[in-house]
Image (cartoon, rainbow, N blue to C red; front, side, top):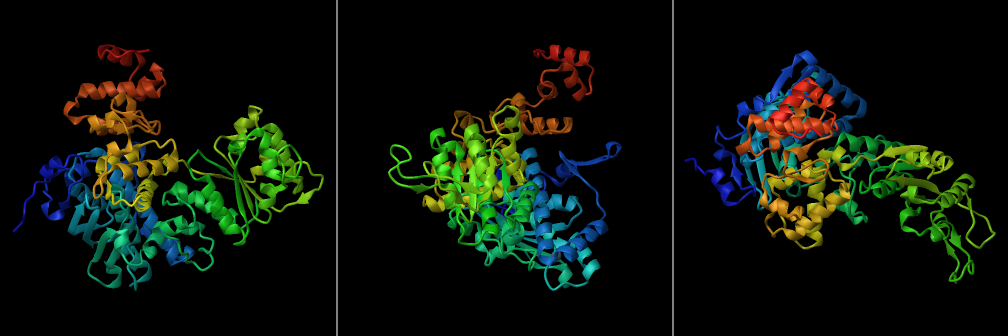
Length: 597
Ligand SMILES: [Zn+2]
């Protein structure tokens, strides 16, 4: 007998906390329904676009995908191709999870999880038949089993290679991992236990939290771009062992490099390319993006294992001490210099010297640094002896050094010495697909460090975290999770109030966080600089509005406000955005009582 539990009821009694759910309880009319989801898809042949909600899609021949897949396998080897395809699938899954979360913020958890199976089918990838899904956010447990019919990837694999000895639906697995991980905030790993390419009539997949699988390193290797930067790495033998996040951490990093996003992968590939050389590298990226970790990774790839890695934050040393810090001091060089002491250059001899926030060096210090870089020689303060040093220089700046040159604050000749191989480190908002992996990592890390057992994140906390602007980047995310782990109850999930200490957060369950990083309860505050067009603005307005009060008037009003904001107050530009003439817009705004200033 089917046990009917109203999940809406469970949700109500537990507040916004994601309640447990079982696929057997899924009601066909629960939103988002299959119809709700198909309505997100529309074709705009006039301008050459297909949309799934606000995501641009393409309709690709499966044979073309098969050809690409085959080239990847033949060119890169099975292991690397599998990694690329898994991560590609992950990105799709993560995007679809965001779509569902944004469009149906109040949907029941099991419907939200089931929506992924439907989207996967709508997109023509595979027909998914859920065997069972159980989910309990409070305990942080997830278990899912699915049968895949008509796998498009299996079709193409069989067409290219005939029957396989292992399961081959890698991109589809990546999708499942990306979708469920993004929704639950826990790393859920899927494995294909039967595959049609191996002769089974259907493919069968099982998903559960990473820590519940044996040998999960295998799966994480395909998921984690870490293998790109492992010095023992791929390209030589085609197989790289990615350290588990914990292992990286034990090596002294509290904030390891984790990611699957294209922006992060591109950055890692550049790192891998230059790592094996001794070339000077300049990292450019905002504060908190992990520049020092990248520098350490670079050192790990290129330098002998016992070579020193010496790091110095130029912003942290007072102007008067810079020279002594960099080049060392002789005894008696000045009052208080009672002992001779080597500087960072000497200590980094044979290894890597990392100069963080190099933009904060004074022009005088820059001149001295330049001389050392040019000649490979240094003199300690108060010493006449010249010492030769062999140092790989790695510098980092959180502002554009070309701007600093124009402003007369940075020496152009030093810049050219440093800018041999620049690597841009993307801010977290440009690699949102990595947020769930990072959340999961830090959750485990801080649970362990503080002896806590916090289960995960509520759906609204995840929603806020996925749309938050993270001006402080990975470091800020790390701090938020630590705060959440301390503030939440053991066995329960981290909710909004634990993350953003703000009265607003508790009073307004529908509040959101704007991409500028502000808590936003007003529609007008939800402006999104990244929105490329009107459609995305509209999607955002509808997604963030309090649906009880949503009316055409309120949407129109919000749209006009957004357009004017985006046009930086220029009414003619705003009108063009909205497909109106300037007088038409001015008239409507007056009618709505909106200020035109
Ligand atoms: Zn398969």
